[in-house]
Length: 101
Image 1: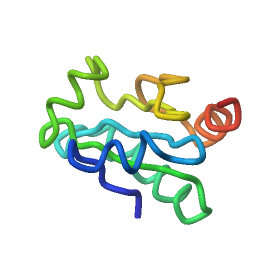
Image 2: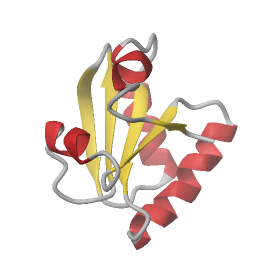
Image 3: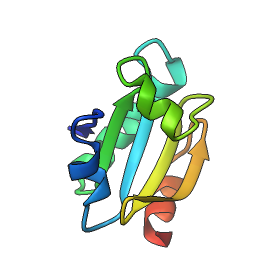
């Protein structure tokens, strides 16, 4: 299962991560987010560093990173955004985004 990120653990889980992390900004009511979630959970099973932020539960984080539509996927490296993908993406695209970080 992907790590659940909140305002309380963002710095320790993402800001201080030793490797790039793909963070999924999503919501329970979002159909494309649900489809994206299936792809992400498969990636987690294969050892990819994936985290999730529910924009309804964490609106401050959504504002902080200017998430305007979901799903939005951001690759963080050394606590900084290095890549942003908006909308539904396939596994190959997500793996490439992580590899390029």
